[in-house]
Amino acid sequence: MQTDNQLAVVLLSGGMDSCVCAALAARDYHAAAVHVSYGQRTEERERKAFFAICDRLGIHDRLIVRNEAFRAIGGSALTDPSIPVPESAVIGHEIPVTYVPFRNAHLLAVAVSWAEVLGAEKVFIGAVEQDSSGYPDCRPAYYEAFNQVLRTGTKEGRIEIVTPLIAMRKAEIVSLGLELDAPFDLTWSCYSRQDRACGVCESCVLRLHAFREAGAADPIPYLEPALRSS
Ligand SMILES: [Zn+2]
Image (cartoon, rainbow, N blue to C red):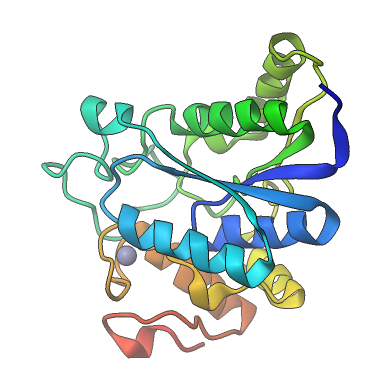
């Protein structure tokens, strides 16, 4: 199959990082977006965010898939209802219970398979190492190793995972998103709620901290409206 260096696949969960990543991909490439539902607590809300962000960014090529493995496997607060989502875990000490075991490999596998069929050479993922929850599948070494797998395990060997946000601080990602006019108002980051963001789970806490540090108001609704303003 012919490859197309103007075409990129972007993994879009619907959160703030993936939204900025998609805005970057859509600025520089003809972007095709993929979303994976995996039985996480907020999957309906995240899927809604995916469609809305694609609409706003003008991304028409979309792929939605379900991965049933994580719900069956469990072992994470996001996919196992018996494990509560903790309130703002201490960041950087140990891998929190919201880690979904080896999730990004599943997501990347779907995106790379689709890239092979489309003939895209780039796969964008908004993984962030700093200011994040310390998930092992968000480290640069992981993506270097994954790219080695792609060189040996795909037909043409030319597909590459790109991680434009990996070394950025969360506040810098907010600033970049504002510059790109990324639709933060359509994103969803909360791990536990789908109506209004809880403001206390680690994802909400990291997000609110990032907006505050960037001097911007977070446009999504929170349970406690005072949280969102800078
Ligand atoms: Zn939350």
